[in-house]
Image (cartoon, rainbow, N blue to C red; front, side, top):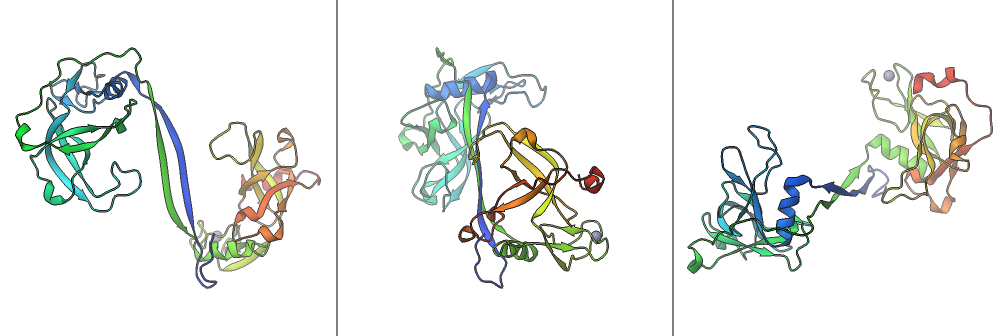
Length: 327
Ligand SMILES: [Zn+2]
């Protein structure tokens, strides 16, 4: 969290990303394998129409699509819209048109980019052709974009007869998924994060049910009233529930196995998630008493990461009755 100005709420850039690995199944495998050999294919629906890319199931009968046919790599722009300011990972890094393009031999249009210099170069009904990527690998990005055809070739493309065959089919793709946004903390959360920068854990108490929420929510979800009373909590608490992380994943900072647990701070009514370290993973249990291990003070910021992790205090376990309402 970055502080712009003490009186203002905090905000921080957040990024969520992972690579989604997807197996293709028989229909899309044929489509992607076709792209690798620079051939576009479509699926034949129950009413005889050809759709690109081929859907896996017929939208009317819900039967699996079994007939795949080759279509042309030229077609007609049915409609389009201009992208004046492309964003990251769009097909082109200069202004371009997104268009619905009906390829020769297909009955439904495909959405793709057309590389032209200005909107004046775009027209509904114009003919375009696939510009293939320099290297085709069996992914939708094998179609780099479309480009206008010179008007002398308006006669229509010659359709290939049969889908080709490949020794080795493309059976899976990796789709990077990414979401970047600016997280705006509420006034209550901003106070909580500024408290952490001073080594304090601040919560708020509901004036009606007297429950203590940490981090503070600003309002009690039970009573629907503002939680106005500030409460400073100790950095000691009880493990309510936990999970042992055994699965490695992208961006993981600690080597598995390790424990992620809900810690109910003494005096709080809601547990929060943190790491339990400095003990064997299989030693962690419900009711275990733990305390925060703070990073060196010169590394503190307005972040929950000021607390490196929690570790066992060595006290006797808390009685189940003391935390059973907080699971
Ligand atoms: Zn309440």
